[in-house]
Image 1 (tube, protein in one colour):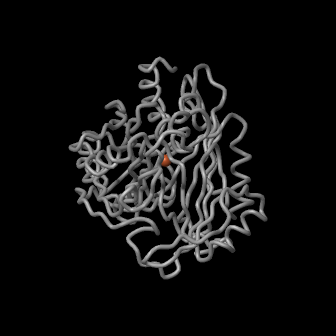
Image 2 (cartoon, protein in one colour):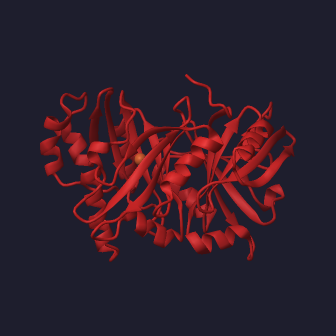
Image 3 (spheres, helix red, strand yellow):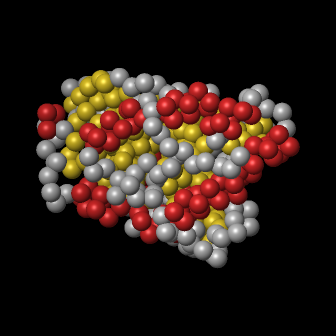
Amino acid sequence: MTENPLRLRKIHHVEMWVGDARQAAFFYRNAFGFEQIAYSGLETGCRDSCAFVLAQGQARLVLRSPLVPGTEIGEHIARHGDGVKDIAFHVNDADTTFQAAVANGADAVTEPHDLRDDHGAVRCASIQTYGETVHSIISLGDYDGPFLPGFRAQHLPGNDAGLLRYDHIVGNVELGKMEHWAEWYGKVLGFSRFLQFSDEQISTEYSALMSVVMSDGSYSIKFPINEPAEGRKKSQIEEYLEHYGGPGVQHLAMLTKDIVKTVSHLRDHGVEFLQVPKSYYEELPGRVGEIDEAIEPLAELGILVDRDEEGYLLQIFTNPVVSRPTMFFEIIQRKGSKGFGEGNFKALFEAIEREQSRRGNL
Ligand code: FE2
């Protein structure tokens, strides 16, 4: 394992700004199997916003809403709908990482400062990335609270769906900006280019997109970045940009070690997934060869499979989880493959386009 020069250890949490955090928390607990571990709001002395912290495996998802009119959070929701505001990094030393990032060209959002409560103090700063999305940079020291200072433990059980952690988090950016952001992650955070896909590799009859995957040295933080490409009709990335009102997080990919079990669980709890045609499964054995799983349950659930030199992976995508056709989730199980399902892009994007067409956006 190569150490990231900025000492990013992992994704500490993802924070979404949402219209109603209490109702969103109910949805993610009941549909996705997260448990609630902490809360911040009026009762904890936070007067203008409230936040619920959900956990499953190592993944932490924070849902925050404004409590009064005229807030930055409220304006953000008015522009973008519910969406990811912050992909926060856990680092060894927030000051060092922040200073290095800024010296490498990052725009500062908040300078390093202490956040403190009865459980101790953490050091926190943040930098701007694509659109209005930010990266918080957090060092925890020996802080021993349930989440971060200002949050109180508040436990509500979840029905665990087997989600282990964030596998990768994908950003959609404007036409011509993918290279800019790939370079940004390289220069500012020391990431390297892990994979790159041209518009010929990711195209259907109607539309195309380009993608580059940026990864930290340990391969524990992976950020694919998409941009639309010229096509006969509107690409899914353009649809996103139009409805989100600019660049932002397109999907959160969650790792599982038993995708059949996880997807069955999610489906039983009301999560809707993109469906691929049955013909996909007729071609599957010829395309991926021997796999441990029986094809029938995969076909039944609509789980996709892809193979590369190192192994294979299984993956599936939800429909958008918010009212705008913007953010969705991916569930992924890796069996040796470090890829992103390149072999599935065509089948998948045709499925997305059928949905886009139903929305009058193709
Ligand atoms: Fe993905």
